[in-house]
Image (cartoon, rainbow, N blue to C red):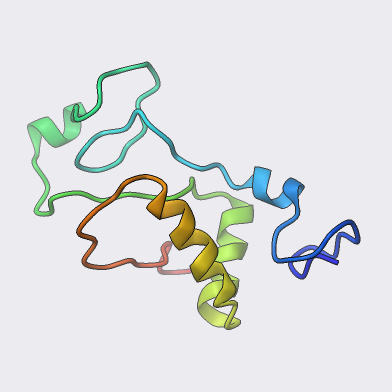
Length: 111
């Protein structure tokens, strides 16, 4: 049984249906803020907002879009000691070839 949803087909934290509900943000995205581009574009491009108003950070990334499902995951990670999510989410981050990470913050911070 999956611990998160109670689905009886399999074991672990996420069944395939729950995993699909997480809307992962993949390339192409702004190389500074991580905003997803809606069209195909070269890597290392920046969005208009970052071009006009360069942020005070080198880069930021979101692993997935904020929706009701992802809010529940973050809430369980932060407040219900579901630390198994840390390994799963780190593995997903590491596949994005992100180097020199100083800090990972489970946001939204108000969840």
